[in-house]
Image (cartoon, rainbow, N blue to C red; front, side, top):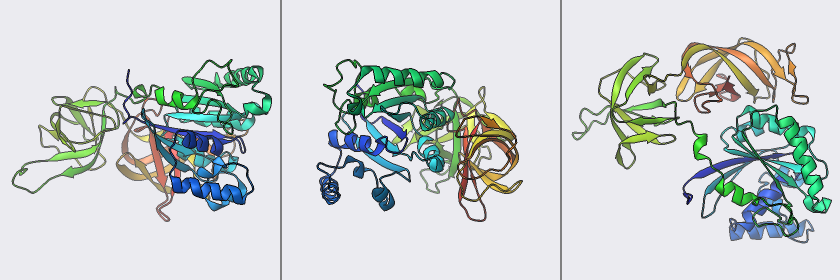
Length: 418
């Protein structure tokens, strides 16, 4: 089956400090010829200044000056590249514990996560933490890259031991697809090209794995959800009675003639027409941006959701969510925040902290109810009006939300409905 070059794969990279994430991404970009000449010249110049013999590949991704000087990744760096088979967006996320929030941000929209393991150290606490966050965010595909194989003489035994260690604790998590690749990012083994040093490894190199990974089934095609962004009323003679509801299909498929319900009002109608950017369509599916017209005049506004009449999300004011606190100021008990969910905005408050996850041991702490920066916890939220949500496991778009502090307008938390 030929792959469509327009298909986009988002992947995130995670690993402990000095596991070689930035070098790996630099190697992917360098060997797949995805670097502009001026970038290459700038990096070659910096590498010479630092006294390196060759090109320091890590410099292609470390954008912040602090990062270049310390040799660590602090912020989420996004990189784009294209091969003849696919387009890619890479989120290079930090490995330090104090940047857990950045990893959650970078991984929230990813199809796949690359977790780097240093072949000399094996599976460490940080590896487990990153696998846990990948599992929490329901990233469908995880690729464990065992890096620095050149420093353990490309040993098959070392690689197999790490595979067994990882599979041992990952069996407790919900990760449907885990793959293991032995690599050397510095030397280029099994990154873009097959390694001549590891003939015992029969699998594909990393880039080929990313290019051929099946991701079209990752989108929920069953639950049809259309959050309305705006109502289109063009006042022109050609469209005198036109009333279209514009937005982006969150999941599922909508076809002309489908019976739909509008939430929260509950009124039903049928789809009369679907208009895309290039003209009328017979059907619309995620993640297309379209305008729907209905057979009946119903009062619909931004924040409402059009769904199939026989398949509806839960409309509720009481939510249980897994929440990651992003702000340096702690959560204020029973304070009001603005909750943003798809196109819907309303006030919400944190009613109760059910438990906090100890990010070191991954155990649940039910005693500590204080929420500070980088904390991941299960909480109960209460909203002023019902919102239409799905379980995050079923639908990552309608199952996720953010909280915004009204006084500072800062995003303070990201959450997943459980």
